[in-house]
Image (cartoon, one colour):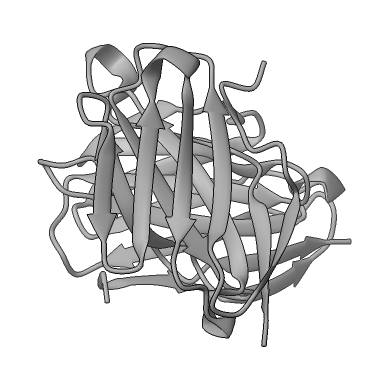
Length: 112
Length: 115
């Protein structure tokens, strides 16, 4: 168990509303990542963080923002949700050494 | 353009036989390759990895082979068990420069192991 939780686990929202997903880790790892998984696309990186207040964009960052004010929490915000953001969102963590990322259980988001 | 490709969306194997999952990549600078297993409604689980300076890594029933000249790797599962039925993702990473160890994933291969 990598000590990662995501909340909420499921969410239904309407187009145009803001949504924030939370990733919490108990491992004190430096690196945290947000991915989305869609049929036919595998997992794609949205944003990542390499320390408190240090974040950067991934492959599919448009329409998303992130914040990391504490080591243990990494927040993903959809400022104005669109139907194209309906997806399963996964958070991952990685330690200072090593290449392996460990994933949380996911958040299933439906934007109507 | 896809840098990591899994060209077989699905694979069906009989229990006890070998499962071979394939992955191709285009970037010769990748320095680690990883395999993840994913069950429905769960997060991906790390399975096994291999450094680009190796050609084989083994962990129990799982072996990954790397063929650098062909930019190809394969995951062998021997013997296959029904509990191995899942989606398998191949991933690659660059651990230098500004990449921060980000993973690039293939689209996955769904393995079905039939009793």
